[in-house]
Length: 104
Ligand SMILES: [Ca+2]
Image 1: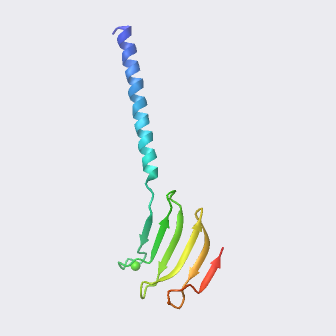
Image 2: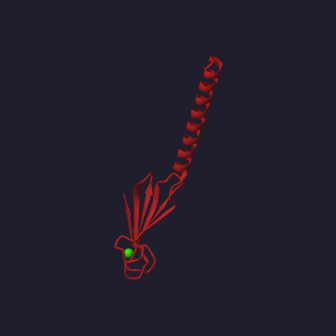
Image 3: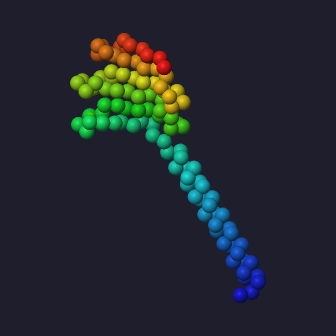
């Protein structure tokens, strides 16, 4: 194998591996952009959602709603900032209006 051919093959290998790394890095970057906006949870497997969680574009949870198992109305909303709970609002008498506010 001539020296020129060896150098050409070496350069080609370096270029191909660089392209493969760039492609993998780009793909990983795109995967990190896939974050849920809403997650609905049926924790007791009865086919009805008890909790819905909402997320911002960074993938941080911003709100979680809990529904009454009797009528499906929202009975509690938990608000988050930077992934931590900061406030909770509860509707204990099912009139659709908050009657308990909790700050954390
Ligand atoms: Ca359920």
